[in-house]
Image 1 (tube, rainbow, N blue to C red):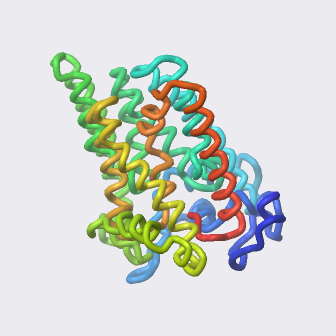
Image 2 (cartoon, rainbow, N blue to C red):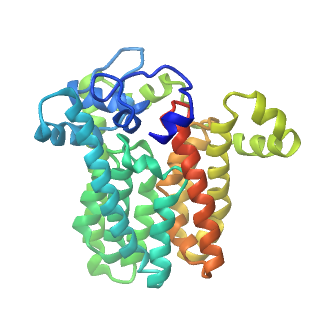
Length: 356
């Protein structure tokens, strides 16, 4: 509500939660939230040669449908179901993150990791009608399962995770590495690890099978993403370009380019996380570094800044590594900077600036 009062709307509101403008509830649903609501309400529809909602993976909107129907039959109940899922998943994700961090760091460092994850500048997405909280919850649960040889948890959580966001697919190599690291000296545990990885693959295969049934193309989800103007696979040059621009003409860029605030916040978040990947590898191992690198390779290869902050948001090894820094001064600095940027990003998002 504070953001709605202080910042004017950047663009016209696309939809409302309650069917009419509402300063509080509408802040929970912007941009992609409308697509999730449409899938929850009407299901998937394939548009041949055009933009399709198959670009949005199914776990979150289908969960919205079932939880929303428990709350009531009106359209806004689906949005409320999405908010409820996001908040519950966020709380569970933080509890699981603490337990996962404790496998590598002491109690105080694990608690710091949880605090930093909750205060990351883009962490407000965890409480919105977006899939980030559910994805983080499932990813942390799956990695915890692989680390502790709880193969059922690893496989089932991983299977749903790869059906939650497109970057879930990019986590498969890291899952395989963690699984191998857990069982390489114990052949009796190999069948469990292989079964868990097979469940993850089956989850992704089921999503491709649905795409094939609906459109005749098992990779229609990929084609749909590309029709939205998002083309992964290129050279990731946007971060170096942003860094050079900020070094050589920061005032002109930030003042005169309408996209500069959002691109800078997204780009600097990604630049920070990319720079930390070698340190994560050194401190926490190859599996976690691979997870971070693969998940960032997808959006960075698109050449776009859009969504980079949200991709960084779910890279939990970064927060575990960051939690390993001791000292009250360091913690105060991290929390202070993160909280300030969090407030700025939230204000820009709720007033329909291109933070999404």
